[in-house]
Length: 352
Ligand code: UDP
Image (tube, rainbow, N blue to C red; front, side, top):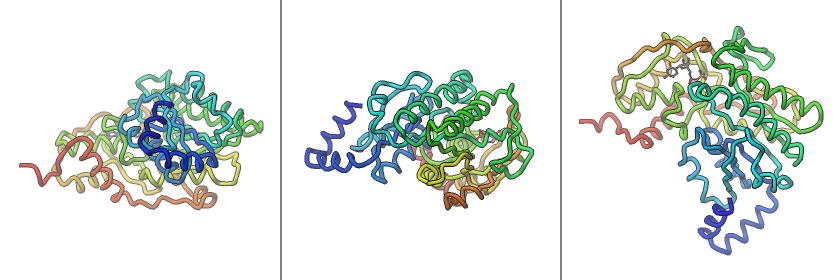
């Protein structure tokens, strides 16, 4: 951290440094756990743009190093490498009194990634959240947990409202994440009930955009990267299962709105785009954008793969005045363009 600050101070020069320090003194410090990841890196960038000082804590398990490089030059940004499963690093603890906000986005969220080390996933959700809640208690900071639509499991109720309690298989391969997040929610609400911390809980539905890892394994990144590089595209099952895809900038706005809203809610809030699509429809939209013929390989549907998912966002609309604004096609176009550069693929018209 000291090294990063030193580097950015050198870059900015002395006069700027003094000014920055002055403004920064009045800003609360925001801790973003998982700030080098996909949504986390966008959140850090937006918080910095709004004048916050940001401390990013990340174990770099699923982060793209370039996500971090985009943030590191900023004078109000500092990075600390650490895993929330372990006691929090001294560099975080020593700033306890400065911390006014804690966002917890630290957990692998793509099924193949969170299933690769299920014990670590469960501990990240439960032990990691406990460490951050205790920091919130000690600092008086407000705490936001990013939970997930996975708490609804393979839902019998459609669309999913926050009061639906879900249909989760606690012995299946998704349980480390689903049940981990359910336990994390339970703990966050207990801290709130006991008056130990102010909490906010967002249930994030499928989100996509630039800064996803090309090997992340999720459907949007897989299909775009496969189509761009001329490989077979993989559809699991018959492609009739549905998801509702939210563009990342909308998600970040929702998270900040939730953190900053006055209602100290003992209730979770769904954040997601309610426009529901089948996986086949998503593929059609991507093929349209990439403008290149694709060959589809059908692979077996993963165990416990939810048949359909769509958020009811009435609560977010009413309480936060938030609604996603980016249409799927527009978000996909931005994401395709970003991935094309990221993986060095050329658009179809440039092919011989
Ligand atoms: N999926 C697919 N092809 C892929 C990756 C995923 O057909 O290459 C399907 C997956 O089985 C699921 C949906 O797309 O039905 C969304 O999967 P993802 O892993 O993105 O997120 P989930 O919502 O399942 O956590």
